[in-house]
Length: 102
Image (cartoon, rainbow, N blue to C red; front, side):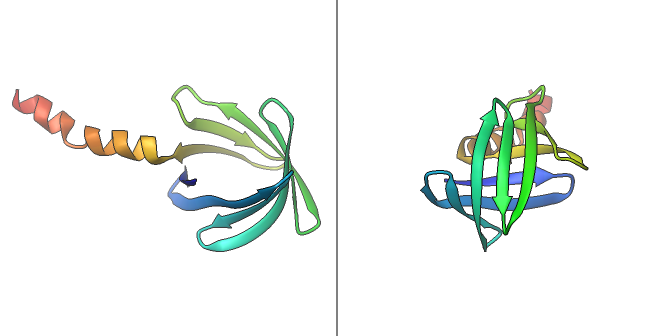
């Protein structure tokens, strides 16, 4: 499944290519990573990548598919755009202009 992750003015295409237990092969903008990913509690993830350990906390935002993501030293607001979101976005394009004409 391919999703788009938006943070500020940056957008990344992310796809899980393979999963064996907690080890995931992931493509991020075409670059392949092999990470060990484990949810240690609801919304908290342990990530091992190239010998480095990260703890990532995800907190649901006020809108669906929007999250606050906290790491040890940074916080981000991100939006997950999957096929459903893309479809709904394309259906809503132009609807504000259409409403003004009615």
